[in-house]
Image 1 (cartoon, rainbow, N blue to C red):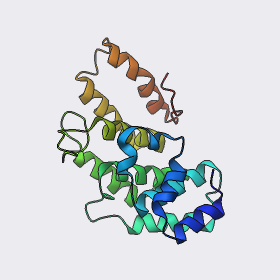
Image 2 (cartoon, rainbow, N blue to C red):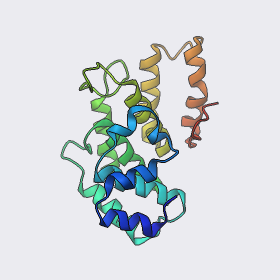
Image 3 (spheres, rainbow, N blue to C red):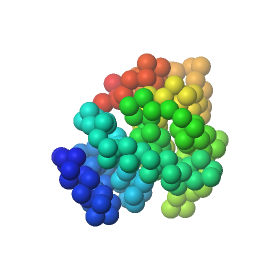
Length: 195
């Protein structure tokens, strides 16, 4: 586990990949192939804001600098690059009860980048029509953001993926019921625990 000073030092050294590796260690962000998509200073800054918030260190001046960096990096379309990075930045900006136009624009970007079948991204990665790992990662970040506005996007995604939200009788739908309850209560999911 990195200290605040170590995190700040790695940032100033521009050792973004090392910082990201350290911040992802043992986390959902390191699972599967998603880690290979998480690169660069935006990801390192977003993970820093998230982790410092989890450690009750959001008051550190360095965290404010990271938030300003993230907001300044937002693109004109409201996104922060790809769907995975945008979802991670949205979660970071929402931490510690964050709000504002950058969050709204980020959520709108994710909404527009979603495919009709519920998967992300619209533009294929690795020549795949949709990427289940990216979709799961985006959903996890949206759930963890605890944003009321994200709830609509999360529920719509689950509805699109399952095909019908009125009959949760299929086993896959039954597995999603705890996620729907957490979303409705805006509680964070525990890593590795979906029950």
